[in-house]
Length: 224
Image 1: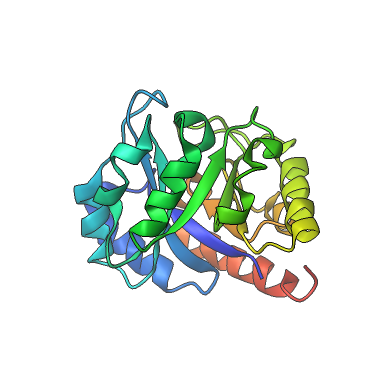
Image 2: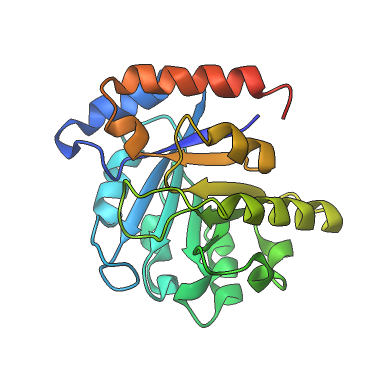
């Protein structure tokens, strides 16, 4: 069954403890998603290692750390915590993707590669067997609250087919503009990790919104 990774990018940072407690109450949530932005690779700045380490100390959920930064190999070790399960870097953000993926593994953390909307799955052809996680960006990275790009579904299907054809077991994630209207389509296409943020954080009742995802993913789990 697909699981959620709850992004805190658009959360109320004065009440993060409440957001983390919310995530832990819902069975559909498997990770806390940390969007790290540098104002260079993407046109926004979010937070760095101190915030990630604080979150790690305040939740029992594993962290899914998404580095939207230039040359991420320089920074990955700063995001290793007792809760960090994945560190995901962008295929477009570096010259030596293979080296950085191996570096993440050397730190005892699972790795991942993210693909911007215009980047094809085939760009990962020669590193697929090293990957634990492939993240399909269904918006252009840098800001929360953007509209879902429908062609992302085809990209998920392509990655799922590549995974099957090669007998690999990397997980497929999708990030950006996911809500109740498209979550089952993404899961049905092959997404294992579905990142949600603004749809939950900006809802009239984040509790009720997550409960709706619990029901949708739980009911669909046996059929996907």
